[in-house]
Length: 367
Image 1 (cartoon, rainbow, N blue to C red):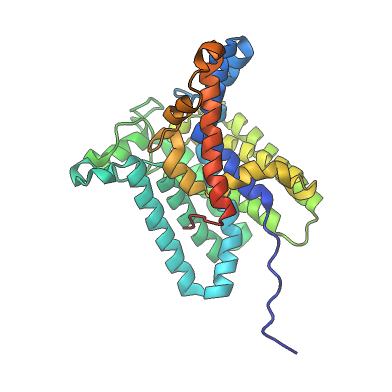
Image 2 (tube, rainbow, N blue to C red; image 1 turned 180 degrees about the horizontal axis):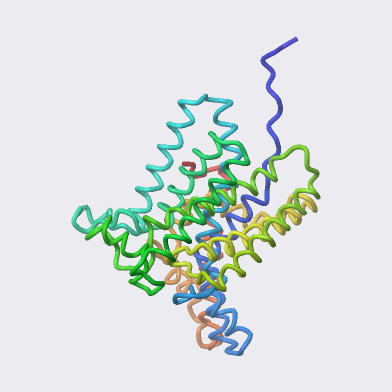
């Protein structure tokens, strides 16, 4: 008998990759498609959709506001599987080395994307200013918590962080929920000083809720990972989990304003709730019903999410619109008000074809 035969690897959960790709789609051109659709149709329905493609100016919640927390949530969900796999394959020391290396790479990529690292001028750097750095903090906290504590203690720690952030933001005298008069903003000014980007988003104290969002994703991952649950039971638990978080968040928002830019506790619960509901929908469609072909457009982007983000998010490094306009040369007069929509759709198609080529070649940026 060969004792070296290892157990077969469990099938990859399609919904996690698909949901990650769905998340990337909107910041890599999808939002532009909706905005361009409204420019052509210009009615109340497309107007509503176009408004959802903008972040809430301060208090409130739009569809686009879910993009950052969804990235964090999926990171926590995936971490549950990767933690066990890495521990089994490489052991404890390799696990912690991998976690710290990944955190460092994410942090540097965040500085490349938004922290002016490529200026090569330390006086211009913004050391903590990007979604990838929020993910790094959430991932580090989640790995340490999941690895070292029981589920009950994981829940307690997550609740403690969420309540602590709520209490600090509400009960430290002299601060309110204004754009630059909230405690989280003032702590950023104190800690980061001249290296703080000139934005309304907050980072240092808000790391409490970055970890919370990632941990809530880890709880969803533990539901999916539990071999005692049937697929339908997992679907049920994910959906109930999402509804409970969403309702709790909306109730809390009656007292604690829902503000994405400072990651209030109500926003954390509401956004994580919607993330869990989306995961339940994707899990039902792609892992239970098995609509794998419908999942493919999202999976292609989801398995290369960091590369999609670094190259095409918000057209920060590469903008495909000029190429799309060249390909559609001559159609502008005929398409009239619909020409911007055609350019936006063509840009998304070109972006997707690039990543489909990489997908076919199994060329993935893994961190």
